[in-house]
Image (tube, rainbow, N blue to C red; front, top):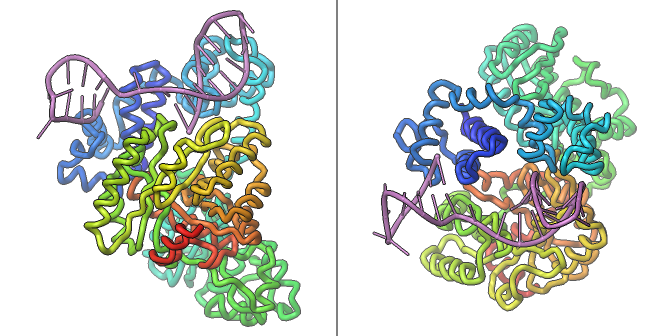
Length: 567
DNA sequence: GCCGTTTTCGGCCCGACTGTTTTCAGTCG
């Protein structure tokens, strides 16, 4: 079992216990374990082998034993017992915004509702309003959120699609007769979510590859087969579309498969495109290309990176030879938004710094939460000062990486920041973000965020819109007005790399670039594993046409420090 | 359920918002 799968069991266990009304602290211990396990960068199997499970901070004897059981049997007795008394649909109901254990319990006991379908039906018949504590608004929200979920059921986060593409690719690669395999489609263009995973395989014998692929342990069902394509349902709730082509058609197939449709249509309209069939079903073609560069050259164009292939002006830019030199992961020299055990992170400053050094970063900023965010153990002013003292003293001991003192300060509901200016002034770097009162009206929220943009001590605005992809809408905020304010104040905007945030998104980041705003691509990591998510933020930057100069954390350390000081 | 140099029990633990109320329960981050 993978770490994430084990972590997920504890997440569900916590939900079930919450439904039962068990002890708050016990539930919190499970939730905490879930967070810790998901953040480990060593496989649990290995930790178990050397008997280290109970030594993980936050994992005690009981949870360690449950992990053992899961790794050994793939099951958890306690979980199975709970599921005997609680219908599994309850977990889905509880995951709706505004529905917690109490309301889920009430729905079950008074209306016998134990699935989203039943709940939707009851809400539409107006049977939910009238239950104690639930009125028309709750009922309307229930309908809204369930329908929203159904709309999105077909798509998964990019990170999930990429993980799946990776696993499937390595399975296919090992098959005999396979000369190459790569993912196309939205996965290759790094769109924020994907409807399926498109794989292109180079092999002489399609039937053999298709048969073997259908036997991959990830596959739950074969949906459709023809002579060189197969559509497979995978256990992760997503489909894989596999196309097998002869090796000399691979580049063209991957190109056509990558899309987007709009990009291909735009290319097809070029005079130089005469003779090329842009319909993927026209393969095999009579023209051969050994790579995509040759295809673009044949069209009279320089290579266009997949992230740009959206028909947002990239073809015109290519024709004029004015494609951007896109920022790359290798350009990133540090991470400016990270959490440690001082607030809600699971690693110490030393652990984070050591990993950053391994990654070749020149600097990192430690930005733990501010005092108001109690749930994240936000730092009191005293603790903040103490942390900054520790960072400075650690800094003196390390000559190959610079640790910047920082804070992620809350932007308070009424505007203003959760930390006095004289203290913010002392920090090397200040990220300001909204973490409360998400439902304020557009005017209030916009003014609130602009108040932070205009504060001279704020360097970066964190995750500007607060959206969680497929889970929570952005706050009602007039992004354009905030961007204008940021442009005029010189405030940096964050591209948060967390795969469920990606906030700014590509379109907002592109607009910010037009306005001359500098951006910072940050992970907001709470553990070592999430430090690896930088690549997702970089992908947003690339889709937004950002060059290294647009991104402040491509600067070498001296330049960055000077830049921050002179802002 | 976890933790501990004040250590094997007792502490961990918050405030704001929302929709429903007419004084508050439930949810959330």
